[in-house]
Length: 178
Image (tube, rainbow, N blue to C red):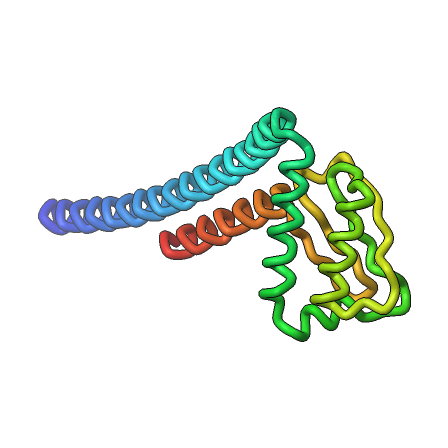
C-alpha cells in the first residue's frame, strides 16, 4: 500500500508539475504578446510625436527661406508632378463644373498665379481659370482641390506620407513577429 501511495503521489506530483509547466508557458506567451503590443504602441506614439516634431522643425526652417524662392521651387515641383500624373488622375482633377481651387501656404502674387494657371491649363486642359486662396496651416506647398480629386504637393503632405509608410512598415514588422 505504501508503494502504491508513493506511486500515486509521484504521479500526482508529475501531473501538477506538467500542469504548472503548461501554465508557465501560457503566461510566458501572454507576457511576450503584451510586451510586443506595448512596444508597438510606444513606437506608434513616438512616431506620431516625431511627425509633429518634423512638422514644427520644417515650419521653423521655412520661416528662414525667402518667400519668392520657396514659392518658385514649389511651383516648379508642381509642374513636374502634373506632368507625371497618369491621365485618369489628371482627368479626375479637372472634372467637374466648379473651378479648381489652388490652395497655397502663402498668397501667390499675380505673376505666380498666372504661371500656375498656365501650368494647370497646359497639363489639365482647364476651361475655367482656377480660384486661389492661402491657408497658413499648409506647410510649404500647394494643393489643388477639384470636384473629383485633390492633389497635395506640400511638405506637410510628404511628411504625412512618410509617417504612413513608417506605420505600414511597423504594422508589417509587427505581423511578422506575431
